[in-house]
Image 1 (cartoon, rainbow, N blue to C red):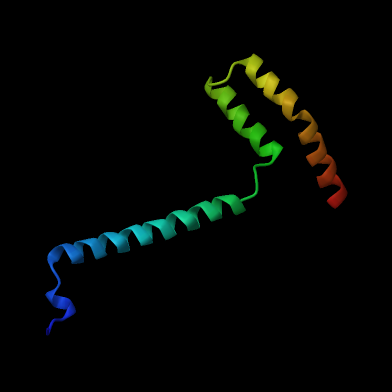
Image 2: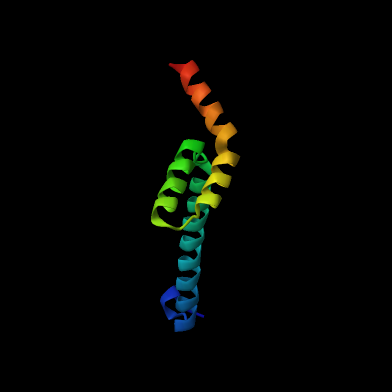
Length: 87
């Protein structure tokens, strides 16, 4: 029997193309997830700035903002102390 790869039916080529697309997509997803895991979490001061913006836009009530501020107060103080020691 004398055949070549080009003699394969069209659905073999379609299956191979689907495999390549899925493999490339899988690599992209894995790299994207790994990148997100490597990014450091937002600092308390960054979070407070975001919450202040939300409050200014009316997306948070004053009570909600005060609650968030209270929850972040210790972390904010710790960041300020750490920054003061490093200077």
